[in-house]
Length: 139
Image (cartoon, one colour):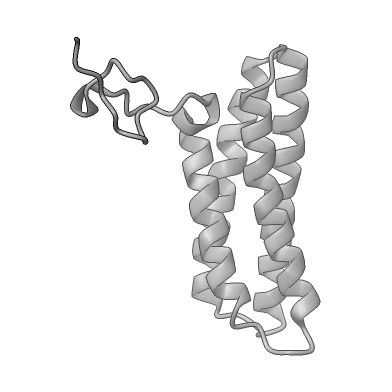
């Protein structure tokens, strides 16, 4: 009787563990813009956690915008038509702009350190620039 791979985590019983594919099946996971947006969201969370009580609505808005940027990139990358991709990337670009606006507001009101807000704004700017290129590519 032939030997079978009985590893419960194996996606295919005929593949040995060392030969299993390591790539993820989703298009967004191969995009640099997605990875930068994830980093932007992570750093936004770290900053938002330190916003004082009474101003949590600004922190919540920052987190929603950063999260939506990531989610819209993922959705757009996995859409089929150029128009659907372009629409999601355009929305994601708008959300990245909202992240920048939230950061400027928090820094201006001295609710967040300016240098930290600037670092995250730089990431938001990179995301917006990469999304602009993706939007142009799908015209």
